[in-house]
Image (spheres, rainbow, N blue to C red):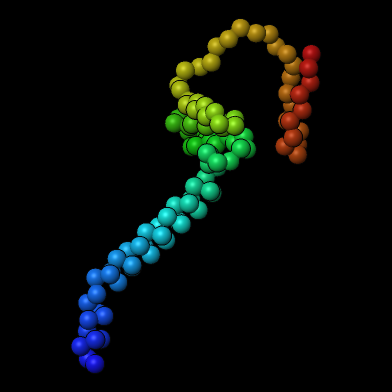
Length: 101
């Protein structure tokens, strides 16, 4: 009877079964990470992700449906032609009020 117990402990198939279980757990963890990602390709919501806000290497990623657009900040100052359209005031409670001219 003792020989039967030793044969079960040395069975290589048990090691393969343990590896399959390990890979299933890893796959489940990866699927959860993909589902929690705001830029999930299976999600139809529109999302804006801001990385490193207020820093020199700030990046903004905008997801509209299946379209991704990435904007990176530069040290250049923005230029453009336009006219003043109004004034914005900050109230004591932190709200902003825009007053068109």
